[in-house]
Length: 47
Image 1 (cartoon, one colour):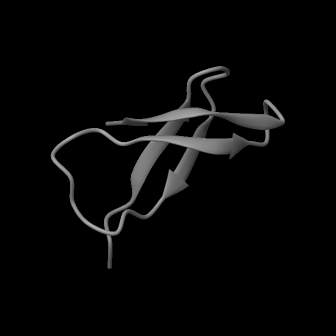
Image 2 (cartoon, helix red, strand yellow):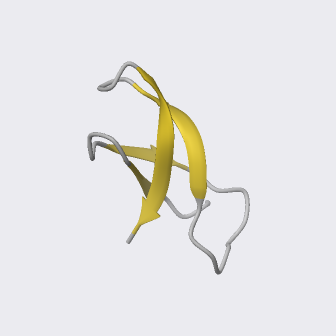
Image 3 (spheres, one colour):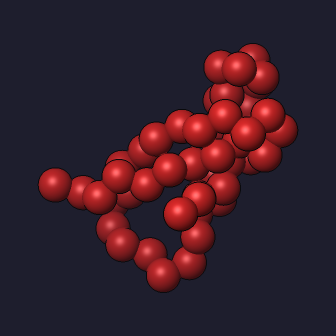
């Protein structure tokens, strides 16, 4: 089973979860839909 990582919205700080396809040494930055902001925003990986 893939490890669960936490993604945090840059705008509002809400946390979303995703399952990565492989382990990365760098932090993931994705543009995802945030239901709290009601639009697509940048999400950065948190620890």
